Image (tube, rainbow, N blue to C red):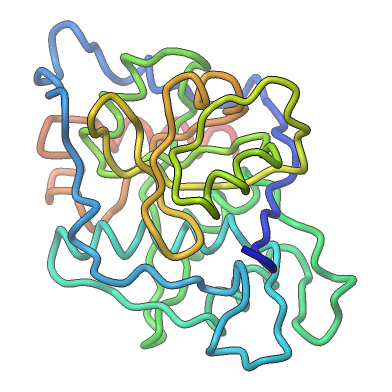
Length: 262
């Protein structure tokens, strides 16, 4: 589809990243992860949120590389839909958050330079993304997933409803998206840039993500080939009063560790 944008900057691994494995003992703490799970149907309309041609911005708007913040809004929509009631987001609000972190302004196309995922995650933890009613939604914390560790990926996705991932996006994936096909590896496909997408479900042996206003499946082979960063995201709107998830994930300890590396 013409005008769809990506916008994730290259992954920047940091040895200070807090790892999911430190806080979860899969063998003794976590419930068994079912073969199929997810709450992707809880949100009836995902919306483009500026990451492509968008009616809210008028006919002259060609889309922005705000995928990291469109993804943040999609993740929040899912968490709140499953929780106390679905938050709604406007394109103007999502682009304002994108601009707050990157300097983007819709009147200057040259300012559309994409986002470092870690910068956005820190903004989401400290400031929060703004919904259509002016309310800000923070994440309680985030932890990096070990690349290629599918057990941790499935556990994080099952526990927290969404896992934010960055992929090196090949042109073949855009063609597959336009054709309504799952993303799969195509030999020789050229990587066109980086894209941020929330994983929201596992269905029929594939991973489902949200991007460009719809749910898009990908094969495990595609994920393993192109994913260059992945984060388990803890929404404060899903946590109990004691600071833990329903399955006992210890947010208090994680927040203390985050303060040590700020």
